[in-house]
Image (cartoon, rainbow, N blue to C red; front, side, top):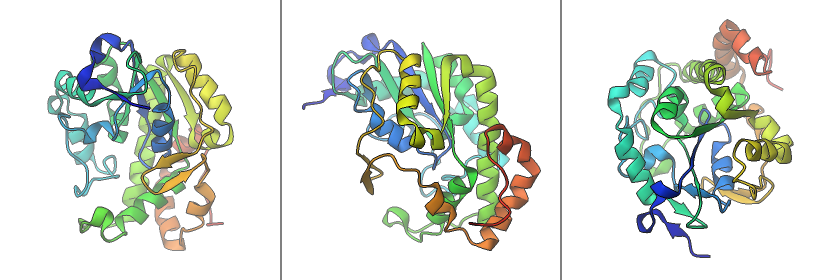
Length: 280
């Protein structure tokens, strides 16, 4: 089926809802993005919003040392949250131009950029009828994925920048800061979004799809129970990867994570997670 290209259509006049995926990296948002792209109601980008040509905002992509860790240090948080670093009208125009859809009459624009978890206020201010999919994931699985990425040597075929001095603790700071900010996002913008955990999405995809359709009724064909390609590595049904990722954790990494998590047990508990005493 031929895709409609934004450069050939007046996307701005068609879009009635801007839908944003709001979650930390390594939290299942790529699968969700792929599923939403199969809906005939959505305009989508083939990559994260921050990766698109014409995006005006901080570049914290590879090989920036803050990649996947942009909430680990205040200097990076300040970079991401400074509104002077953004030009949303130019970015919106660039996104529309590069958007693709299964139906040229699609009326929902969807994108996700993990660091936008820190920018929900700005998104709500600059995009009309902004709605949000708020998600969190077990922080131990999130941290395992971050550490594995930074220790991978040559991700994307390029040399790694030096990781933070204590990578596991940096990953844990990033994860818990994202969860704390997500709690704040829900308090301020929960009325125009839907919240679910990665674990719920994997265990109850029909329920999550139903909740998303209730938020955006135009997505009446959304299906989370389908085999999709994710990050050019997986092509499978939605699968909870937590157990296998947590099983990879060694005692040193777990101890480092816990040095951070024990100071923020209330944040973990707010979303139903707890500090682990030992790896399974």
